Amino acid sequence: MVATENSGARGRRRSFDVDEAVETAMRLFHARGYDAVGVAELGAELGIKPPSFYAAFGSKAGLFERALRRYAAGEANIFARAQAEGGSMAEVIEQTLLLAARLYPKRDGVAGCLVLDGARNSADPEAAALAETMRKAGVAAIRDFIAAEAPDRADALADFVAITMKGMSAAARDGMGEEALTVVARMAGRAFRRELAAEG
Amino acid sequence: MVATENSGARGRRRSFDVDEAVETAMRLFHARGYDAVGVAELGAELGIKPPSFYAAFGSKAGLFERALRRYAAGEANIFARAQAEGGSMAEVIEQTLLLAARLYPKRDGVAGCLVLDGARNSADPEAAALAETMRKAGVAAIRDFIAAEAPDRADALADFVAITMKGMSAAARDGMGEEALTVVARMAGRAFRRELAAEG
DNA sequence: GAGAAAATATAGTGGTCGCTACAGAAAACT
DNA sequence: AGTTTTCTGTAGCGACCACTATATTTTCTC
Image (cartoon, rainbow over all chains, first blue to last red; front, side, top):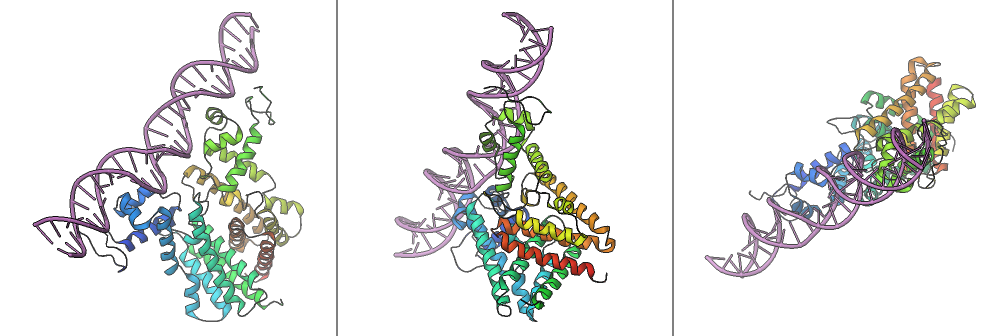
């Protein structure tokens, strides 16, 4: 077996592509949840043996953390994508929910949001803490974004958005499709606008 | 050890109270999820050994089914409770969400809805199927209830309610408290009314 | 009280979990 | 080339998983 260069230039050279491995792990964790994916299966899927696995990632939770970061840095960061598209504050929020409706439905066995549901009911406190940290960062970003325009009601409005996203992720994992999710996203978007327009 | 009568008169006599055991198991499954609770722990907590466990419940999933049924038959059936309180259709729906806000926050390590989240990410397909069946029954009841008044939009409105409940359950499991959940429940209730009043 | 039936406890099944000790192979440095 | 360092494969660690075969105790029937 010949050593290949990693696609990410940093780090030690390994006989396998670390980025590709993280992507594969991300897909597996996303499809079935953190606990349900074993290290043996990850190793088999990634084509590496346990010692290489632990040399590269430290632990199963270490790989999960890298998978979470990769997930949040990509197209799954629907709030950042909606912000990039511009528009009013309410438009950005509604677009976030509409992007969720497009992203969350099951494709190739993967549904919902990895950050919101990937470690739900996990028995590993480390994995749970990693996901919780990222969830809090996400809702904090939304709250701060809302606070610029409605500081008094930012907490409540952000909670509403967060609950809608968590519900959409759960519903998608339960099998709800894009059209139904989009209808609900529009309802929630209208609700957000109306709550925003109402007197505080 | 003296044999005691079961509180439920049906079934074989056992040295332990089956109903009490189901209640204990319900609490454990609810607190940590189906997969994270082992048969050994259940046996220890229930004070029974594995053979008695399997004689009484057949399997871990069998006990989970009994726990689910017990859960859905009690105060956790917030939709039935809201219906019993009477009021307009929209009032019943809003009351359902308000009851969720009161029921879901963490108490004694238990949060959210057992049916919605107890088997989430479970590796056991039997447990997942049991929870899915009960979820579908619950949302079907809500849909039918809405359909009596708004048959054209019953599906979309029921999806909105279901997603709100799933989101509230997830948020409660993530630590959200009763006040914040209540605020969101009111928002969702107002949204439901407005969607109902809008032209279809 | 004797025999039959049922529920129990002891002990252990094979399997999987995350993880690692050890040794051999490959690569890097001098 | 020789030495050192780094990585990888083989094998297996102890712990836990859901579950059960066997034997003993308890309970019921007569």
